Amino acid sequence: MTSAMPVEKNVIPPDLTEGTSQTYFKDCPVCCPANTIHVHIDDDGDAQVWAEPEQDYD
Image (cartoon, rainbow, N blue to C red; front, side):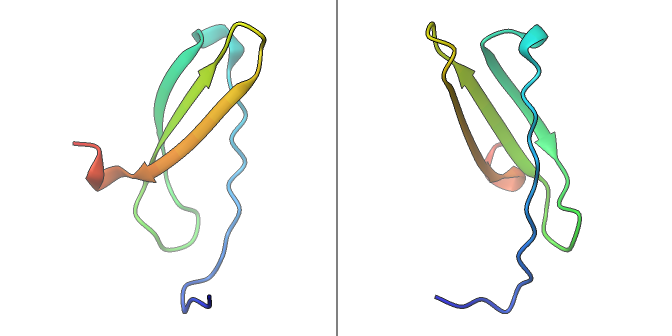
């Protein structure tokens, strides 16, 4: 699959002091709308991270 949009990586460092379930917003550094970032850290310390476009989160 190809895209006309540039591909840019986002670094998402989880903040372990904010608890095991976190939601925050991160702006795209290139051209896209902001993303809603979800982080869940389970009892074993494993993290699940997923994102969705901010406009889908309202």
